[in-house]
Amino acid sequence: MRVNLEEDYDVPYWRRQIEQNTFSAVDIVWFHLERIATWDQSGPSLNSVAELNPDALAIAEALDAGDRRGPLFGVPVMVKDNIDTGDKMHTTAGSLALAESYATADAPLVVRLRRAGAILLGKTNLTELANFMSDHMPNGYSGRGGQVLNPYGPGQLDTGGSSAGSGVAVAAGLVPLAIGTETSGSILSPASQNSVVGIKPSMGLVSRTGIIPIAHSQDTAGPMTTTVRDAALVLGVIAGPDPNDPITLSSPFGEAHDFTQYLDARRLAGARLGLVGQGYQRDWTESDRVVMRRAVEDLRTLGAYVHEDVRLPDREEVSYEVLIHEFKVGLNAYLRQLGPRASVHSLGELIRFNHQNAEKSLKYGQSILLQSEATRGTLLEACYWKCRKQDLEWSRTNGIDAALDTHQLDALLFYGNYGANIAARAGYPSITIPAGYRDDDGKPIGLTFTGRRFSEPVLLGLAYAYEQGTRRRRPPRFDS
Image (cartoon, rainbow, N blue to C red):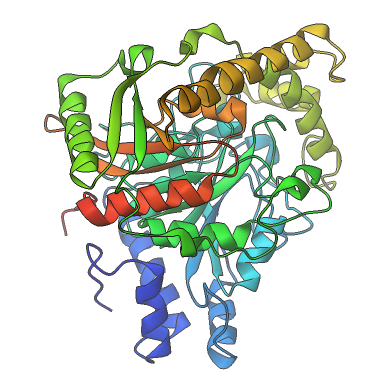
């Protein structure tokens, strides 16, 4: 099977092949298994895949024998290895303490993927515990999975984290679609670093049930794909109400909402956008500035007004107290319900396991785990509620809302994941899309659109128009 990854690699392409009987679902699964063997497990050894589904081919055979229904019919997908699947695959978050842990049921988002006809091909590696274990753990590293590599510069360029495996797997054509999770930057960062499209949805759009948690006020899952259309399609599949996650009942979109209806190649005409400046540009190199200047020029050519120096409160004004307190509560609740094969059933037991297996489990320490364990685990501390209120005032009232209102903007613009922190604390959505590559080292750079809660229709339209008007993404190239 020959596939042009530069032109064809998206859901419509695979659906056409099935509908025209060019390829079967089994053919498509074999194609991706061979790419994983060639590029992920040998060659550059990207190490983005944590585990393959032993039933993937059987699922494909069953689909080929049945009715060809569902928006993702026959399309392989991978999910980050902190998302429950009630099958033969583990759910570990990259921790050796959970290396033999199996979920008893699919997370609701996985149920929706299967219902849409997607073939769950496997799970992707990640930064251990979604990068909430140590304050200096490298992006894409875990004790169980090892180090994920960036396909645009294996061993040289950062993968981004913590959904590193999901971003790399999609970028390298190992799977057309992947699901990542984000608490603060964990979808936007690897999407930008690996030149793919990533959506961090509004809080409440996608169920958090069945995801190993960090913080209930910020955790969400979202799609990582090569095109905005694919991302919109997958978002519509995984979004929806979940009675076990009450925040999803606040979503205005309901079940099986079609987000592709908002894709309009002319949407930038007359749009008002604000590029966030000040401290949000402090780390830019000259190569970064070249790419971002071109992105702003492209937006203006496509008809948008761009205010180039929108001010937001400085990133250094906030702490991580909210996450430290919420982590113990959420993780203990998750671990408590695991079966007997799991080695740990509380944060305290996880810390002790890591100490007892320090050579393999504590290469970068567990400073964050220790800080969280020191909290009461009941959310009764006054500092938690004070910090949570400050977060909302900083990110919403005095932050994103104030900026959008002051300049009458449709969305804010950020370099890569530089705005992830403020959007995450607000519970607001962001979409990052490939904007280009640095000329000195080839590092991919994403342009991120951020708006108010449940403004996905606006952001999708803007991102799609930018994508269609620029076509900046190019796939990584490996020596054959």
